[in-house]
Length: 373
Image (cartoon, rainbow, N blue to C red; front, top):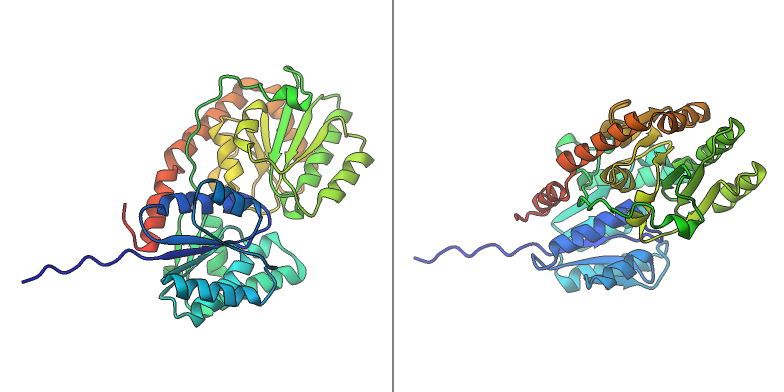
């Protein structure tokens, strides 16, 4: 009598054809680190992107493609990677990846096809982009792909779009809790900020859905009301010129700084007095979790995953999206009520520590992939 052999662990290929770096890319890196040493895995990226470089720095397995993500050659390249590597799980992480990755996985007869959705495309996009992105999701539904959502709001969105409930797995983003930096203001001098400046920080791609234009308007209104604030907006994207022109038109260039893309956001957050996220729609942004982990008071739009995560007056000040007067009042509340704001920051820290740990996210992802810790 012979023992039954243990089944071989799955071979997992993640696909992330993103040019920019954000919360989705953070999660991809964390997942790759989780899989390292557990099973065969790899990440298909575009060559020389921030994601590919960060994966390479950590000695994580990548398949960089030196071509446009719009090129049909991407399909053939991914197909060859799947077949040559014997990958039996394909997990795609953004619309272009979910289109080319799905087709390649279908042609390669990949047993398990996964579509990880980080935001509600119908709320974050407009026009032809919205139409195309939702068509990609529906194409995945047609082929009965398994969906992973990063927040309750994204799960609701997928269900409304037609995804079968039993094909959606909620695996909320999670983070490792940082040690609180005792030198909280050490980065202020780098940005020409004084110790007693009231500093607002916002982190996110410079895209219309992130609502940075409303934060710039709010800073202008605060200055007009006699409040002295400094605002750092961290990120890059298509709205750079629009935001730069608006800052100039409102004459708030001394108050608002467009910092650009940074790899050290976790080090910048502690120097701020409040974290602002004036988005029009969100899944479950890593930047928000990181801000909570730094015990920062939060002023954010009451939308999507933010509304599911935070409670107004307890763990944040939540305001209606695209509402400058309410955003101004939220920031003023934090400025004028330091003790209550500190308590909100502490409550947000406790929430993330207790419910959004990276360990929980990792356990759930291992289950999705058919692995166990």
